Image 1 (cartoon, helix red, strand yellow):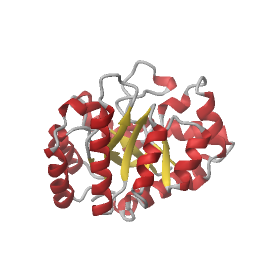
Image 2 (cartoon, one colour):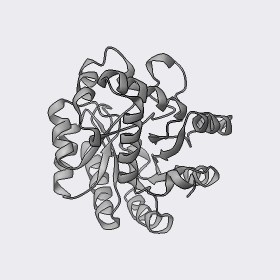
Image 3 (cartoon, rainbow, N blue to C red):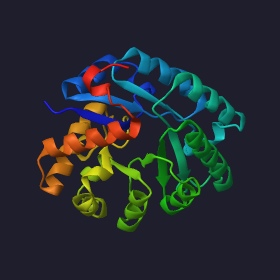
Length: 263
C-alpha cells in the first residue's frame, strides 16, 4: 500500500465531530499515515491540540488565518509565541493574505502575517500559507524574511509565481481544485514542476474533489489527488507518492513519523 501524507487539512473542524473516528480509519485504510492540521484562530487552538493528541499520526500547526481576521487581536501573536514554545508544533499556520474577501483589511492582514513570519524565523518553523488573490504580495513578504521555509497551500497561481516561490524554497501544495478539468492552468503546471517542489493535501472538509462535488471532503481522498497528478504527469503513482511524502517529511521535519505512526 502507498504511504501518503495529507499535508493540509482541518480535521478538527466541527463537521467531523459526529464521525471523526470513522473518517480517521478511512484515511488510515487508504494509506494516509500522517495528517497535518492547520489552525485558523486562537479560539480553536485547544480543540486542534486535543484532536491531534487523540489520534496517532496527526500533527498540529498553530496560527492565525487571514479569513478569520475579525477574531484576531494583537495579543494573539504573543499567545501564539507561547503556544509555539510550549506545544512544539510542526509549523505556523494557517497564515497569509486573502484579497478575495472584500471586508478583510489589507493592512491588518499584513500585520498578522508579518508577525507570524517573525515567529517562524525565531522558532525555526515552516509556515503554512494561504494566498488567495495575493500570491505576488505573499512573495514580497517572504523576501523580507529570507530563509523562511514553508508551503503555499492549494496553490492557484501562475507558472511565473510558482517559479519564484520555488526559488525561495517554498513548496507548492495541491488538492481538490486540481482534479477539475476546467483547472487548465493548474493541470498544465503540475506536469512540469520538479518532483521535489510540491506536496499534496485535501484541505478537508473544504475544497471537495471533482468526484465528490457537494460532499464533505476528507483526508482519505488525498489518494485521488495523487492519482490525478500521476495521470497528468504520465507517472507511476508510487513515484509521486514517494516524492510528495519525502517532501512533506522534509518540510515538517517528520523523519520518524512514517516509521512510528505516532508522535
